[in-house]
Length: 101
Image (cartoon, rainbow, N blue to C red; front, top):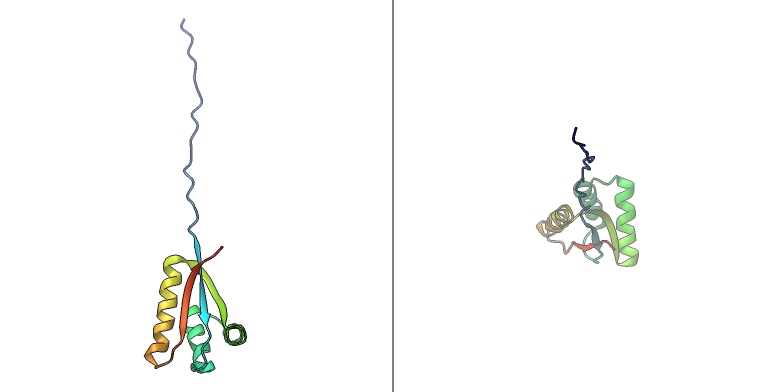
């Protein structure tokens, strides 16, 4: 009778790499009213009143503040929409994105 050797099959699961994250940054300016900045932060980034106020004050005191971290597509979309909301009202409100380190 012939010998049969069997090899166990090993399944290799492909690993999906996590997408790189991007920070959405609020740039301070001296013209956009604080209340409007808080409104945009609450509307676009779903921050609470208190969180939005803290982000706005931090940007005011330090010049910039990280609002949130998202995947690239989401970060760029939110930054663009928030900046456009300021432009629609005639304010120089600016949000940018940069890769998280």
